[in-house]
Every structure is written in C-alpha cells, then in structure tokens.
Amino acid sequence: MDNLFGTYKLEEVLNVVSETMSVTKEAILGTKRDRLLVDARRIVMMIILTEESVSVSEAARAINKNHATIFHYKKTHEALYASLPRYRNTYDMCLKKYKGEKYLTFQDFLDRGAENSKLQKDLRGLQSENAELRYTILKMEKKLKLQHFAL
Image (cartoon, rainbow, N blue to C red; front, side, top):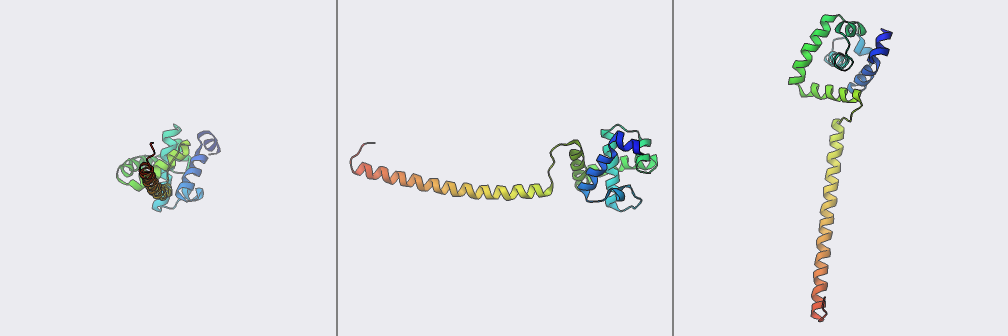
C-alpha cells in the first residue's frame, strides 16, 4: 500500500477529494456507506484509474476494496455523471484541482456576480458624469457663439 501511495499519487488524490468534499481521508478509506463518502471513494477511484493508469486490482487494494466494487464504481460513475449535475460538478472540480487547472467554485460565481454588479454601478455613474460633461461643453460652446468667438 505504501508503494501505491508513492507510485500512483493516491495520497495526492485523497487530499484533493477530501479537501474539495470536506471529508477526512480516513472516512474515505473507511467502511461507512454514507452517500457522500461513497461518492468521494468513487471520485478517487475514477481519477486514479483515468489519470494514473492503475489497474483495477491495484486501485481496489489501495482503498481496501475488492475489484468488483471498483467495477461497480465505474458503472455508477458514468450514470451519475450523465444525470446528476451536483456529482458532475464535484467530479470536475476534483479532477481539475488534481491536474492543477483553474477551477471555479459556486462562491467564485457569487463573487464574480457581486463584482459585476459593482462594475455596472460604476459604469452607470461614469456614463452619468460623461453626460453632464457633454452638457457643460454644449453650454460653453453656446456662450462662446453668443460672444461671437469662433471655435
């Protein structure tokens, strides 16, 4: 098992998934069958199998499961990924984080929405200021024309 942690980066995958899903590595490697923990195990296995080219038997031994469990994880992963946006988003976030790619969380979207609202408010203020300045320029031009000054 120590060899698998070093060779196939199982420890790194466990860190990514446990951090992203807010569960402990011990719980992922444990025997409880809560939906969140089973999803976490499934995501760990799918990342290991697809990204690290580990055999099903090696992956199963790494998390103290039998190979039939891993085949079941693969089958249910495909169905859940296709039908549940929550699962798909969680898997995609874990995979991108594991690969070191930029990933967005729901909080990132909220922050960007708030930033967008602030920028739109600032833009309306600048447009209003621009309109006032144009009006002032027109008034000054009119005064200059009345004074018979050529522009």
